[in-house]
Image (tube, rainbow, N blue to C red; front, side, top):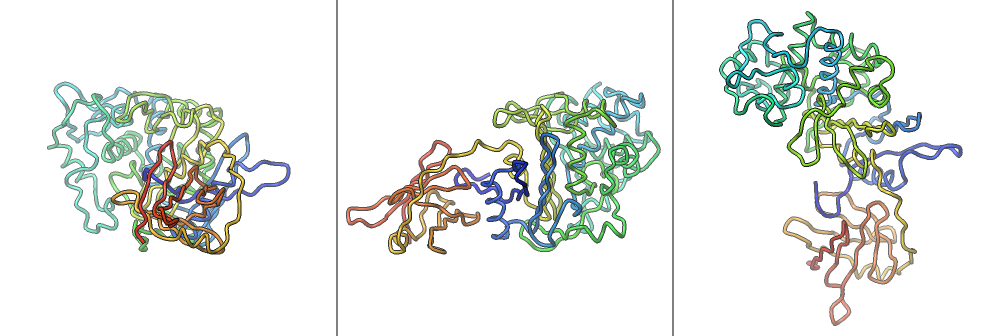
Length: 443
């Protein structure tokens, strides 16, 4: 995350009526519009749940909406977790069962007498690495497609744990893939069928699936890699439990809502997955079963993000059940900052009184200002006002409150332009997050 003028790439446009307040502030809507225009995201859909209302809005190519399908990547782990909790509730397994009990014919590594349990896998503390060393895809654009059960068996049989299970947090796609396979094997059905039977059908999530139907393919957004080039979908074999699910914003809002108010289908299982279980590698953060739990903006939030080679996703909600957010995009760029900002919006900022400067005065500020070795502000005059573009970010408008003093409306930041003894603008000071960062004018 950039530490200076950070642009949240996309947030949401909210439709509202006179009788209902929008769930997202205008400032967030403006950020979304700016990022779409800049091409930071080909498309993005955001869903918000609050006070019994839900709103969904889409931006970008293809006019995406609540039924547009995206890969959700590691948000899939939050589907594997309730499969575990549900199996516990039904007496099929126990959290402290060694995973080896569910996988006959597998040799699962141990640390002394400490076996990897289902709880260890679900809390990212199994001691297994992020990925197996023998994951050598034939097609790097679809890296999990040809990783079969035999490959997983081979890796686990010779792997030595670097730490004892349960000792410390280490995020592992391998671990959740193994957990999904173990639960499916124990219940004698493919992982995709288990997800459909135990989660998506009870929650009426009819557009959430792994293998797309012919009709669903017509609503599947074209993915893009991090550079914006068209990419291929990802497919999963043995490790489906870590990232194989595709879904829509409408379905994910149903999913989030069920976690926020676990009173109907899967109530006990969904309440179980969001209970804090173990510490993570971040200060003041814990993990439930898959879900990350931490404090932001005075709220405890429960969240998970995901990314594949052409898509990104975020799902999160406040632990008090007052607000939930989902974010989907068809590019391999993290949308978690978008989700966090929409989930815990900052208080409305009171802007200074705006004044109008003439074109000659505005032109005196145009130029590039270096605020750090890899951070510049490019200031230019457009459409009768100033636009400021930070390195790697979209151009944003700023507004004059006095001569040499400007403020943003879509981020809480201000600019002060400084002049030399001849009255020429020679530097700028960025005021943001309690810091004042000065940069000299280069051009």
